[in-house]
Length: 360
Image (cartoon, rainbow, N blue to C red):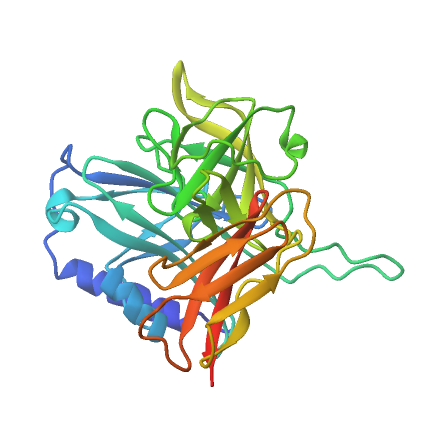
C-alpha cells in the first residue's frame, strides 16, 4: 500500500490550524465531552487511529475535496478509545454544534475508505461515538464450501443504547433514549410497545394498537418502530404502515448500569419490511377523463375486513364505497388535464397511496 499522503496532509493542516489558535481554554462545566471509540469489523480496538473532527461547513467541503483540513484531530489510545473535550467558548456559544468524526484510509492514489459518525453537541452534555472500520482483505471461501453471507438487513443485531446524559446513542439515525429512559422518536419516528415478549424472535407482524413518539423502555418488552413518513392514522383512529416500508423490531434485554445507576438499555433489534397484503402498489395511478362526470370506480380484491379510505385533500376529492369497491369523484373546481389527486386506502395495519390523473 502506498503512503497515506492525503492523510499526512490533513494531519499537517490540522496541526497548522491548531497552532494558529489559542486553545488553552480551562475546562468548564458547559463543555461537551465525547468518548470516541474505533473498532475493526470484529470489534477489536484500533490503537493510534487519527480521528478527524469537522464542523458542518468543513465536512461539506471534505466530501468534495478530501484534502480539506479538519478543525482538530484526536488519536486513539491502545484500548481504541479517546476522549475529546469541546470547549464551550470555542465550539458551543451558539447553543449547539453539529460535528462529524472521520476515519480516513487511503488505499492508493485514487481509492480510499472513509468511515464517519455525526453528532449534534449540546453544552454540558456527553456523547459516545463508535466508528467501525474494515481492515485487511476479505477472506475468500475455501474450495468446496459456501461463502459466508454478508450481514443482511434482517439480521438480529445488538446495541448498547446509552441515555441522553451518558452518550445519547442513536438508533436509526435519530431515535434516542431520554434521561427518564423513554424512547424518544421526536418528529421522525413512532414507537409501539408490544408488551412483554420472550425475545426478539417472539415479535411477529407489527401491531399498532397504541403508538406514540415517546414510549418507556422496559426490559422484557418488545417494540415496533417506524418512520413518520411511512406511518398514517386514519379517520377511524386505526394506525397503519405503508406497504413495503421498512420498520424496526426491538427487544429490550436489560439495563445498562454504572454501579447502581441506570445509564441505558441493552437492545436486540432487526429491520423488517412490511408486506403488501391485498393492496395495490403505492403510487398506482387511475386515469380519469376530463370530459364527463369526473367519477370512476376502483375495484379492490376481497379482504378479510373492510377497507378504509380517505382523500388527501377532501376539498378536491370525494370517496364512497362498498366492501371492495371505491367510487372516486373529483370535486376540484379547477380540474384540468394533467392534474393528479391523491387518496389513501387501509387494510388492517397496512395502507397504500393511490392517485387519480386527469387525461383528455
